[in-house]
Image (cartoon, rainbow, N blue to C red):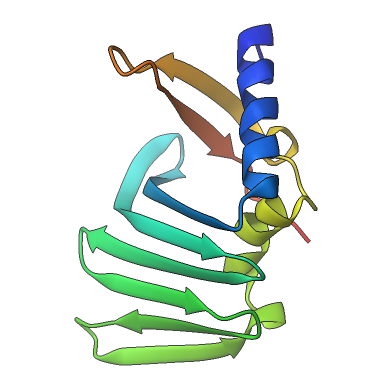
Amino acid sequence: MSREAQSIVRVLEARYHSARTLKAVFLERYHEGGRDVRAESGTVYFSRPGRMRWEYESPEPKLFVADGKTVWFYVPADRTVTRAQMKESADWRTPLALLTGKAKLSSLCSSIEVVPRGEQGLARGRAVESSKPAD
């Protein structure tokens, strides 16, 4: 990782470790055999302690909600809701570990690329996560 990327990652980690709430637009890409097999996008919201909401918009609406103890996953197309205890759900571990400071972005990702965004002076990043979730 370049020095510039390391510096930006440190600033980003410091910011989200101190944040009480956070909202972000996300794009998840799933790979198999070195090629894209699926992409999903939407908006995610985090609130301390331990609450999050993932609103998937594409390719189909889905909702993932966690209140700190329980997680729910709703798929309107299937008319199903799945509920589990948060500690039993692997889906929450990585995002919450990052927000609580128990994990670092640089240690969870095999690649981090920072790309200039343009006139706004903001940068956007792309992180490639390893397949191992945070504990």
